[in-house]
Amino acid sequence: MKSMRDFIAQAESEGMLKRIKAEVDWNLELSHIAKLNEENQGPAILFENVKDYDSPVITSVCTTTQRLAMIMGEPRESTLVDLMRVWVEKNKNKIPPKWVETGPCKENKMTGDEVDLFKFPAPKFYPLDGGRFFGTAHFVVTKDPDTDWVNIGTYRLQLLDKNHLGTQFIKGKHSDIMLKKYQAMGKPMPVCVVVGCDPLLFLMGAARFSAFESEYDFAGS
Ligand SMILES: Cc1cc2nc3c(=O)[nH]c(=O)nc-3n(C[C@H](O)[C@H](O)[C@H](O)COP(=O)(O)O)c2cc1C
Image (tube, rainbow, N blue to C red; front, side, top):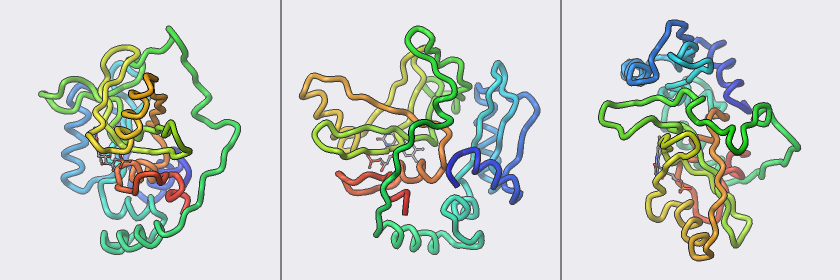
């Protein structure tokens, strides 16, 4: 599996994904349906008709052990303990990523004043949330200014306005370590946000790996 598109095709072929064609509101309704579905160990859901938007939203990708097994390429009857053992074993090896010239993420570009984050159907999840969240099961890529260390980390992203997202790197998280170095240098930290990638990379972003090691290298193994 190399992409979210691959996940959707694979999950659908194995009966682990449902498409919702009825209109669903990004404002509290979508998250509520996803929550109830997850409590019942339901399928991944592709909301194809989000109110006010043309683009879909996927939820509940990693919310059952069976789908975690699928994302890790393991037998579907694996238990969480089985998966944990595989995770530990595989993370003894590193396979660095290969650089490529381009990819599907370059198909649509917005730059400068064209940037409008409201063009994306970011959901509001809970009534007391401070706003809408652009990234939940996503990851943030940053690079250490002193070395070749590239980190991926899952840090939630709130939609603040048309060209700003807010996040909180909790103290000591790897992006926070990097950010403090950039701040000391008086430089802004370049950041890349990836939403809708191979779900394995979201899991890597949320998992704990040693500092100075790149999750990308372990994802390869
Ligand atoms: C859905 C989700 C959202 C998260 N949001 C945050 C966040 O906003 N800030 C944060 O510091 N950690 C957050 N975490 C925890 C980090 O992803 C986790 O600690 C991870 O190991 C951080 O990567 P790092 O070790 O490379 O810093 C979140 C985890 C998940 C699963």
